[in-house]
Image (tube, rainbow, N blue to C red; front, top):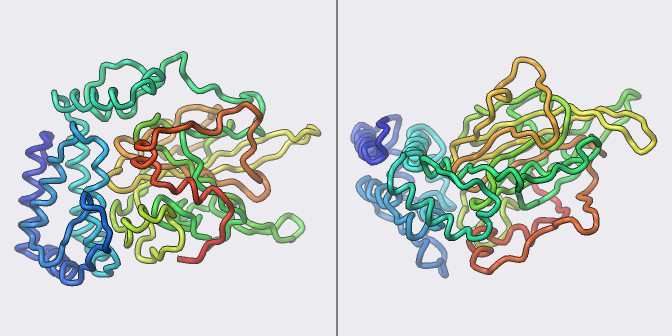
Length: 413
C-alpha cells in the first residue's frame, strides 16, 4: 500500500472494485447478500447518522468510503463516530451483514480501510498540523498537562506525553498491595466471581477470560479453581478502564513486580457489532447483546506477577492481568519493546509505561484473582471525577458510565 494516504485510498477503492468483479473469496456474493437483507434503521434515528444501504451497489460502497475518508475532520474532529455508525447499518440486526464485515474479504476490506485511515493520521503535512491546532483549541486548559510539541503527525500528537511536572503521582510506590489506575480513564464496570464462560463487556462485545487472554494458561488464575486442600475457589474480578479520545493515551503498569507473559499481536476483527447504534443510544454498552459470531478483535495482554504484604506482615503472591483493547478504526495496540512477547520475565515498577493506543478511544481491562480486589477503595479527598460541560459528555461518554458502574448479572453470549 502506498505511503501517500490519498494514493492509498485510490488503490483501496480500485482493489475492492476488482474483488467485486472477480467475486474474490465470495466478496460480491457476501456484499450483495448483506445488502439484500439490510434492516432499515429505526424510527427516530438522528439525521446525522442515517444511512440507508437498501439496494446499494459496489459503487455506493466505494463512494461511502471516499466520503468517510474525506470528511471534514478539521472542522468536525469528533464526527468520525458518525461514519462508523452509518457504516454499521449494513450489519444492523443482519446476520448476512455480520458475516460480510467479519469474515473473508469483507474483514480484509475493513483492515485495509483502517490502514488507509492510519496513514492519514500518520502522514506529515499541513492538514495534520491544522488538525492538531483544532484539537489543542478544543482541549483548552486540558492541554496544560501535556508537552508542547512539535509533533510531526496527528498520531504523534495523539500519544503526546505529559509534562514532567504534570506526570501523575504514583500512589504508595513502596506498598505493593496498592493497585493504581493504568491510565487516565473512566471506570466502567466491575464483574465479580468470573467463570470460564462469564462474558465480560469489552467495548461493545462480550468475551470470556480465556478468549481475552488468547487461550493463555494464565487465564486459569482468574476463573474458579481449587486450593491446596482441594476446596473450591471462586473466580476473580474484572475492571474496565475506558480511555476517552481526548485524554492521555499511554497505559502503565498497575502494580510492581514482573511481567511473566505479554503479547501485543493478537489479531481480530475491527468492525461487526450487530447493533452498534442501539448500544450507543441505549447507554448500556455491552450488556444483554448476543455476539456469538464475534469472538475476538484487535488487542494485547500483559500478565503481572506481584507480591505484597498484608497489614500483619505476611507476604502473598498474586497475578494481575491487563488486556488492552482496540476496536472500530483502532488497529494499533503498541507495547514498548521490552513488553513485546518477552521470552523471560521482565521486571516492572508500579506506574511504568507499557504502551499506547493511537487515534481513537479504547480501554484496558484489569483482571484479578479471587478475593484480591474486592472493590474500588478511595481515600477522602482523592479525585473521583470531574464536572463536565454537557456537549463533551454527550460526544464522548455516551452515558454507559452512568448505568454500568455497579454489580450486575450477565447472560451468556
